Length: 169
Image 1 (spheres, one colour):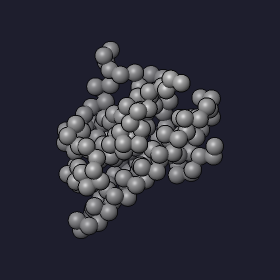
Image 2: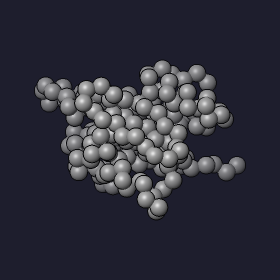
Image 3: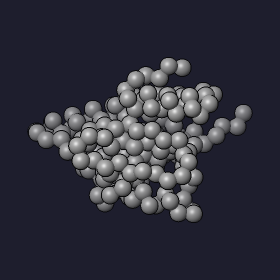
């Protein structure tokens, strides 16, 4: 049996926290079936230090991670993207990018942990909570892709994941 490898792009505004966490999580959970990428519509140019610290604490490789523009994924030598997930929250002032082309897309908005206020512990908790929410969603996604759904049904299930509903199989 030949397994398909899917290219997945996580998009956010700054590509400094949520999308970076998602990229690292998918690299771990889907190492042979998925290539994980992340980018931002207005990248900050650096990864939030709490995001890097958390990933290191959880034994994720971080040396290759960097904040980058989604423009890197639009050229002729860019990988063909199969799935795009926007992880920016659709509330407040976040502006989620709109992706051209035909990959399957879903919005998995989460509040920006980089905007968390309070003590250092409060900020670490915001990042940790975001990590675990993304991990649950990405784990559900990797299980779905193994099933044989039609595009419309898969699209619906991807949207359920983003709304916090466990997709029915």
